[in-house]
Image (cartoon, rainbow, N blue to C red; front, side, top):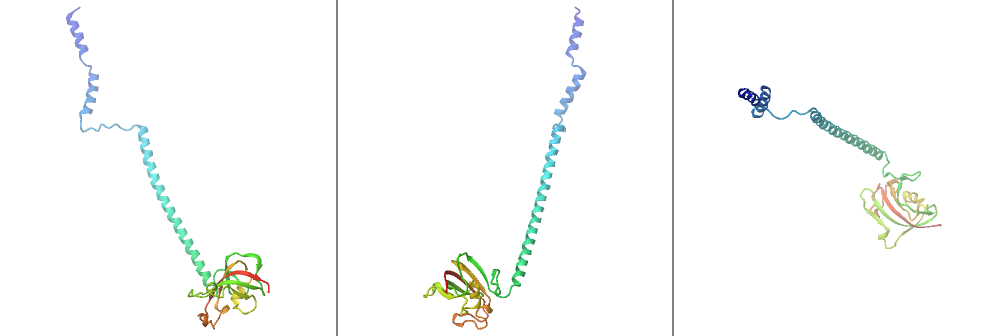
Length: 221
């Protein structure tokens, strides 16, 4: 072998190829240059995922805003409905004759009543019955109690229904009571003690009255 030829071949293998040198130089320059951002560009799937997350956040924000608006609308509607209902109640009360409350009407009279406790229909108050009751009488406007049989040493009150010896509101309001029933009577002044009142019980003229009556016993006349 020719020694000179061998040296030329060895030199060729030891020398890097220009193409490889260029590639290495480019990579080295990128790593060493502080002014270049080395962060990798997001791949297409990553970019789509980031956009989807952004869009979802935006939709959530819009959704929450819509929920708030809907709640405000519902609150406004509820307030309007409550206002209308209150107005109807006020109108109904204003149109009631003096001394009347919402309750069951006594046919043909202005006295009304409310059943506080149901009784046994085996015996019912009718005209001519002897009725034994506990009762509490109150002046409607002031709430002052003027009569309470439980505080009376004479005990429960006995009366003959339909005898005409009681005020109209009491007599008519007790009709139909059942034994064991508790009933509240709301009696306007003209069906109570009227323009005279009842001085001995401190009932002023034209005073509306309330009686809470508990029917203890009913017996035929």
